[in-house]
Image (tube, rainbow, N blue to C red; front, side, top):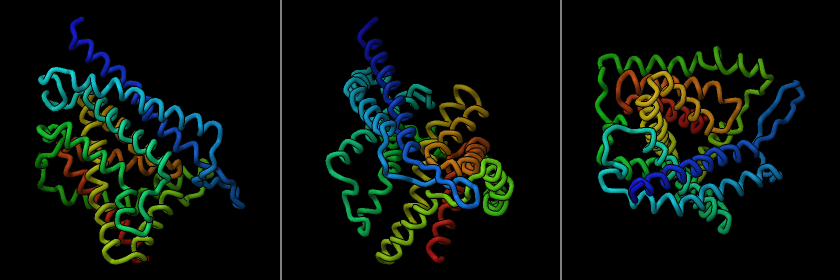
Length: 316
């Protein structure tokens, strides 16, 4: 085994540990959810700040798996030959998608470590910087994609849609479905089957952030609308439909790529009540990405959905 192969193995196995840290971080967020019985005999999911032994274990494991492997992963990545380094091959292979998520988890671990010593939030919730801090994860998603794939963003889908004649109508039809039929045919039946209350702690959090921005100033309101309505769709679609789905499609085919990206997309929102509609939305976004061979199409649909939702919260 030559030196380059050794560095590649170190990068690969340390990336696997970082992905384990990514999974642990998602489990940590789920560990703070509480299932509260209501008077109607249903279960309401709420977010709690209570630290249990299990959540503490997940927190420690997340930090360990996000920081320690980074000392091996970063040097190994930098030691690879230039023609094997990220951004020098065509397409989005599974290995480079794994490296992308590994780097994301390193940043996530560093931020978590900083929050351990410098209590969250760093900025006032009523300040402009406080709004940006709330979207720090999305900034990292997009920044890493720009750094790792800056010379081949086309491979992530940043190209003109392949079939654009009925594009606008397709987006409108899918939006009308998600607005008027998704809850009727997916969300409500599944929630009734599992006795879930439909109120979502995450939707309450988003609406609260919008109202908070509204109470600060009109400028803060505009920043919130732009971040949620435009920036979040670009960042999340770059991660899930750009990097993850592209890699899965190239390795396992379209069906596996769309299902895999939709599954992770719905899980990272950490809301069991919203999991079915989010998974369905992920399938729509994945289909749009694959059918039109462009990431701009799911970004347009995602942005339309987010923007109208934020405006509804804003004017309520």
